[in-house]
Length: 114
Image (cartoon, rainbow, N blue to C red; front, side):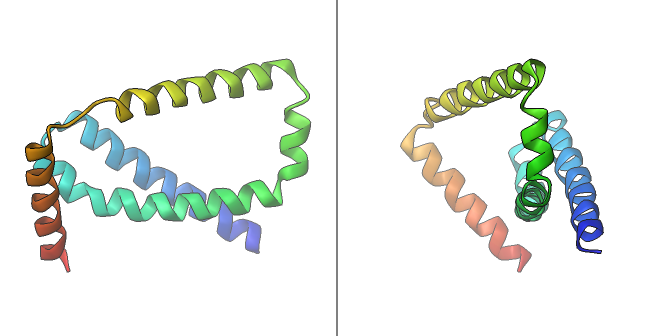
């Protein structure tokens, strides 16, 4: 029963994250991103919790998969890509005055939701 709940949480959170992420990618407007942010953030938390439970429940199978070179190559390439993207994002400096305006606008938008 617990595995079914985890599987459904993974499914719904994947759908929520993928659809909100694709919409934010296609509709490149900060106002739209601010509107989608609560959905994306909350289901990101659900997905993280479900993924941790999934990994814990299936750790033996994951270790078996990692015996294959193709799996190791895939994990290595995806991890390297993730590190490169994090590095690019970290080095994409937003001017302080613009960052302050954006943070204030986001805080104001989030306070209107509650």
